[in-house]
Image (tube, rainbow, N blue to C red; front, top):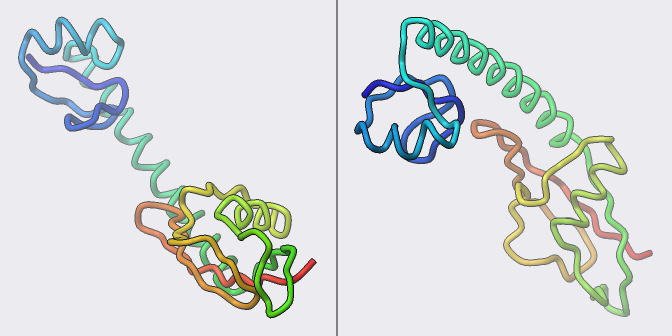
Length: 148
């Protein structure tokens, strides 16, 4: 049975895709949950419009992410933390702290899960870490941890 996906379905396709699936899968799972509609000529035209809109949105998001990557890559982000003697932190600087600092300093909402920090930072000084802003765009953040 041919169906048009109304939302992204893992291992099947993305919104607006025209896919061929088994009748039972479409009738018993996809259609009742609102994930797909049966492919009719009108639904196929609607799917083409959804694909065009998705592609245009992807281009805009990729361009915005590339612009943001240039801004974030060219500047330093300063994160304050309590530190003891020898430059050791009392706690640690986590991805949430970094996302907060970026939001405070640049007015940019950054998802903490996109920051590529292997281990929390436990020392003062300069650190670099990757941030995935889009599936195709990655920036390198330069973090300076200073004592408060």
